[in-house]
Amino acid sequence: MKFAGDAIFAEWRAEDNEKMSHNISRQESLSPSEKLNLTNCVHTAAVCGAAIVNKCADYPIFAESITGGQGPQVATLNVHCGLGVGEMAGVHVGNEYSRREYLILGEPIDQVSEACDSAKLGELRASAAAISHLNKYQCFKDQLKIEKDAKSAIIASRRQVFFNKKRKATWSMNGRVRKPTKANMKDTYTIPFDQMDLTSLKYFHKILSFYVHPVVVSDELAQMYNPNTRRDGQMAQERHRAEAELRSVFTIFIKPKIDANLSDDPAKNDKTFKQLNDVMNAVTSVVDSFRGHLRQYIVDDKGTFMKCCRWCSNVGHNSSCFSLYLNIRHYYCFYYCFY
Amino acid sequence: MHPGNKPEANETSKQNSASTYPSMKKVPEHTTEDRAWRGSLSSSISSLGNQPQDMEPLPTDATSHGTQDTTVDGLAINNDDAIAMMMSELMACESNNDTVHEPSLASRAAIIESIRWLGRHIPRCALSQISQHVVNLGNKLVDNTPMALPHVSTYRAALLFIDMSGFTKLSQHLDVESLSKVRMLMIKQHAGMKRSSISVVARTFYCTNVYFF
Image (cartoon, rainbow over all chains, first blue to last red; front, side):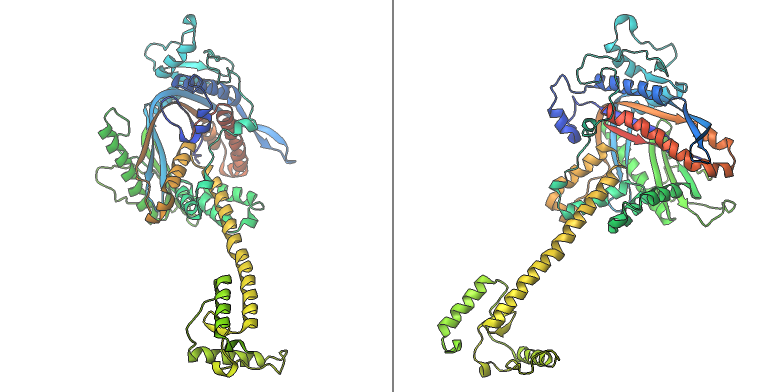
């Protein structure tokens, strides 16, 4: 039994070199010195990672007692983190009628993957590029260094932080974690609904549904057409979602053998993006014909992975004679893993 | 004096009625089918039990009851009929307001709520790009101009990867029955842990985007 979705990528985009359309109000309210440059981004991410390993390392899982209270501890969950920095690309792939995905790719993904693999449980490690940014806030004697033959260095553990959490910029939390407040919550993107008529809203809704898991979309559509059940159906909705994730399915991992890294050549990058789009559309069309669906499309250091599944609640585990022929272009090679 | 004997006054009445109530239209003449239809309608109304028996059937010939005062939807009627028709149209307009605008607002609110819910499952940067694209399309939606795919944006960023461990080990140490009993609890607590991390990341550090894998 495998659980997907136990990893998180969090990114801080530099504000000094791009117009962040979703955060213009905050951007305009800041002076140039307060804007989040790349060094500030790295520092904030490092402080965040240190807080996470401090807060979430050795997280106990307790069983539920008969009376519904807290029972004995049955397991311990843990975290380890990696930090990287650099040029990235966000790519929308898919089509206009069924399915889309938003992919991120770039050198920082390779950095964080190596750093996280090197980090022990409860540790935060940073890549060489990230450490060079962090050292800008370190005095000379406290400069972070990377060991020989290593690509990353530890910068925080459960109880210790090896970098200076305070920095010169006035915007940051200066090493302290802010409590979630309404003011913090306001720093979120506001969709400009007032600029959309009903036709635009319907189009927007349709496009958004292409990015979201089909189970969530079907649940949401059912509730949208019967709004009276929205509040009463909250528990049922959560249960249906959990059941949808846990029912018997055939899962297929597909690894296209393509190089999805960014390069300095724009033409080569364009070719890569188009190739990713072609892979997405080809797999979606074939999986759709088998009444399955694409669950994840990941571009990481291990390559490009697509995870598809086929619903088979009426099929027993023994009858696993499931075959799938993917009629994709000849230059894509796939690995199949059946559970 | 019957109004039909004063063509000028009759014409003025028609103009006033037409200008006051735009839905009232002038038609040059009635066809035989219209008159026959009105005759059958009046006879069916007269046949109702609670209707006064002395109700006179509407004329099937224009000349038998004088001339028309006003024409509504192609039917010739007198002033009383015009007032009655006006009232019914006003009431119909009010009811139309109820039946047309309320569902429109309700459907708009439902779609917005649904968009907000779906938007929670999409990275914020992708959401902003899609919404800006829709806003920029504006009236061009009828042309069905899609976002050119693949759509790419490049940027510089710091990336933090948070990997959780322990699930696979836990699932391997428990048998299927025990696992089925505690799996909901595991998911619940795992979700709690994930929410905890997310709250740290998103609310206290002004994180730009969060992706789950």
